[in-house]
Image (cartoon, rainbow, N blue to C red; front, side, top):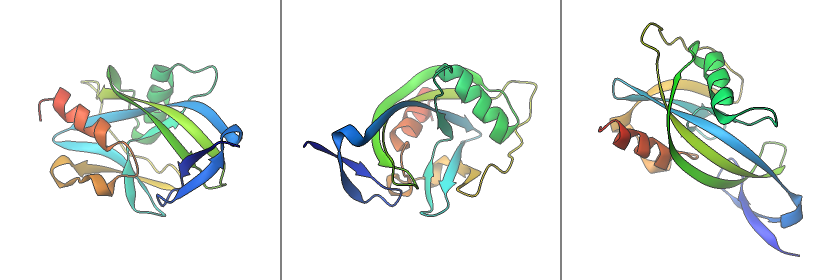
Length: 155
């Protein structure tokens, strides 16, 4: 029986039977403003990741990321270009195995709207983080996508 290595929230490698893995596309936003990026911290590990969500079968990536950012930041962002795509194999908190095809889009604040962060859940904390202070080891995932966002904005 073939196995695939998935990673739990702590980064531990766990072999999982290939047929036990569920596929789902996901979309994340790289929202950079004033040399800061909007990130979410996984409270159990203290590691950062870009804000985003798994796609429902009826959602398009741009619909899903707009809706998610409306929930966490009180703003419907302007969707820019697709910055980065990667596959992730992980175990969620209930130890379910997933293969996510993650799409990262560059986002911008509409000119007439302020960003207001809201509480989302007990699992993550959303914050503006200085780009200058970020290191790869601080990320659960999405570091390369943030770097792509910096390149796009010529930072």
